[in-house]
Length: 225
Ligand SMILES: Nc1ncnc2c1ncn2[C@@H]1O[C@H](COP(=O)(O)OP(=O)(O)O)[C@@H](O)[C@H]1O
Ligand SMILES: O=c1ccn([C@@H]2O[C@H](COP(=O)(O)OP(=O)(O)O)[C@@H](O)[C@H]2O)c(=O)[nH]1
Ligand SMILES: [Mg+2]
Image (cartoon, rainbow, N blue to C red; front, side):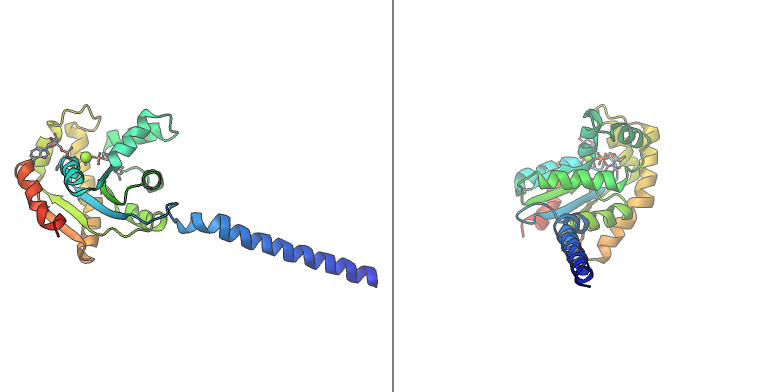
């Protein structure tokens, strides 16, 4: 009888220990990854910059960053860096960009997360993202920082095509066929994201027709407040 009670006691102890281990494992190991908490001491401010291909997002972001003290993160550049690195995703990214399609959210959001985590900056302009509602939802789940505001540079398609074809940076996607596909993707996938932020009252729509200086001037009221 005594041996049975001792055996039972030992087993109960083992179960209790196992449960404790699982609890510790789930809070210390699983939870942060699941909750997507950035491994940074302070939560940075994030703003998104959207607009069709060639509208001038990169051009204006560079100027905003210099003048108003933001760190510019172009998600297109993060993806292009992966192509030229030894990343396992390089080939897939090159193929997707060449076709003018959208890279899977998992890859993009994790690249963005890494870029934010390895920077000490407090204020980011995330350029060219989220490009789809699926991107936006994945961002919310993994990075969890609501953008303070979203800039949308607006311009007609004819002008967009002209700007892309004159960009001259040797990009695989700066040709007429890919640009037409990117315009379709923009209308079908990115405009819903723009509508989402309009409804949330976070969107600033900026007329992107004019000179670079004129457009930059239109931003002053947003950044000078
Ligand atoms: N306001 C503008 N008018 C004419 N061309 C512009 C203007 N702003 C930028 N560009 C040019 O258009 C091309 C695309 O600009 P870029 O900043 O790369 O746009 P995006 O990042 O939105 O694709 C570049 O060659 C750039 O010099
Ligand atoms: O969140 C993103 C950002 C970019 N891209 C891919 O990268 C290309 C180039 O993006 P970038 O923002 O550099 O282009 P831009 O609009 O500035 O011409 C896009 O067409 C997509 O194929 C993507 O898949 N997801
Ligand atoms: Mg760009």
